[in-house]
Image (tube, rainbow, N blue to C red; front, top):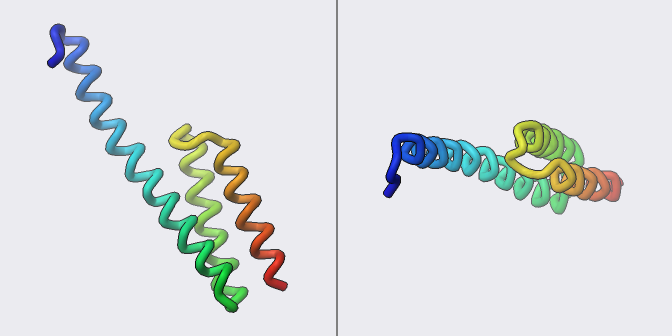
Length: 87
């Protein structure tokens, strides 16, 4: 339990930010997973669309420092390499 007003406010802010971070990270993970499964399937157009959505979500998460930019870039690179290998 917080002992001062400022500590109580920081605790409230932490809860609010944690919830926001968790939702963005969860959405990014979901898009990433769906993109990976789409790439494993045979339909190249659907896979490309899914990869685009995942890349967009990763960029949004990295823009606000929800995830590290290098992690986002690593995942994007992995998806693009897998998509190009489908040819």
